[in-house]
Amino acid sequence: MDLLKTLSELPGAPGREERVREFIDARVQGHADEISTDALGNLICRKRARKDVKDPKKVMIACHMDEIAFYVRQIDDKGFIRIHNLGGFDTRTLFARRVRIQTRDGRELFGNLNPSGRPIHLATEEERKKIPKIGEFFVDTGLTAEELKGRVRPGDPVTLVQEFYEMGDLVTGKCLDNRVACWLGVRLLEQLGESDYDIYVVFTVQEEIGIRGATTSSYAINPDIGIAVDTTLAVDVPGVPFEDQVVALGGGTAIKILDSYSVSDKGLVDTFIELAEKHEIPHQFEILPLGGTDAAALQRARGGSRAITLSVPTRYIHTVTETVHKRDLQATLDLLRKYLEA
Image (cartoon, rainbow, N blue to C red):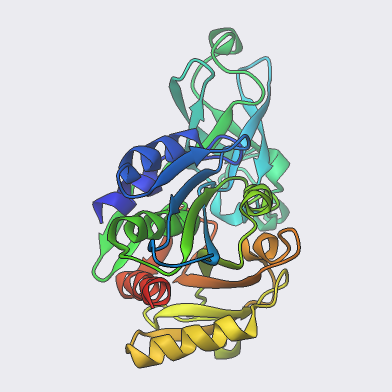
């Protein structure tokens, strides 16, 4: 799990994915026929089809690199840093978090994230019940406004800090949404044999703020088949009824039927189910009532493509303790390989 640990702990705010991209770029050298980075920052890795295949179909696999994060908005006269969020946070999980600020000179500055207001010792009963809004949070670096001057400015990205670690058959850390897909994309390039397809593994940018990287890269590639690899909600925890759990940790890869942004191609759904059953790959079905993936962009590329999402079940999504099962990771990798090498 060393590769996933490194990917999880790297910072990669939407629009500032360069640390993740540079790491992946170096890692996959020699495992793709062509590697390029487009104007928006997508890392595009192409593996050509077998030479005897004429007019091979193009398959694009989208694995987004970005994580939900913040940008510096302003610094007040006491040195407290106000922030703007990029992506959907549950503010109940943001109290007393350590954060990293990437400054324009390439250095890092660390601080504490908290909401404005009185501590629980002094708070009124009404204040204790209040859930703070995202705009109420600030970063305390321990530096004065004068000391921050010239070091931090509006637009510097701010990401949460969390150590990745293993818990038995589970792994937990920040931004496993969607560094698990980056892990899968890298492993796929390293392990994939010959294929009848022209395969484009694309490490996309800015998914968390509107599937932007997948939109531009899929337009350029114009795939026949699009596969988004992402995480999905595993709400198999206390306090949630079975019918609301979406998928379960350890149940295998989740073959998406639909979400609120796309309906998966029926033929692809059937094919992936048949392959999973044939090769005894653990799998389950996903219907997600709210949310979406890069598949929505793949589906609409130019004249359209057949598209689907394969998801890794994940507990506590959009927190720093996102948790996945190693069995589900392996099942997703196995199913992708079986499809591409069939």
